[in-house]
Image (cartoon, rainbow, N blue to C red):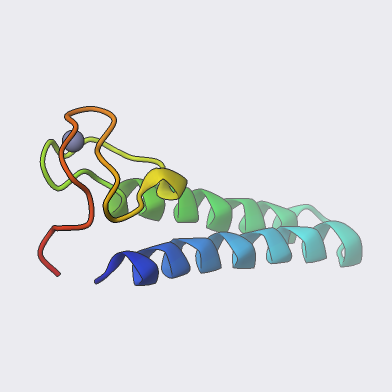
Length: 84
Ligand SMILES: [Zn+2]
């Protein structure tokens, strides 16, 4: 999976979670839908944590900082040259 797909996937999960939470808050009386939305957002964060790791040292890098050609803030390894 390339970096564009990873960013798209994790972003899409969080957008869906925020939409579900928003709909739950606006249209439903109970908190179940809101809660489900928050769970989805949390899942998106976990997916992001799993996907955005340095290919050299394995430490987490924020999705916004994971730009091919940048260097890892932990080990200074070059990002974006991992195997697809
Ligand atoms: Zn690193």
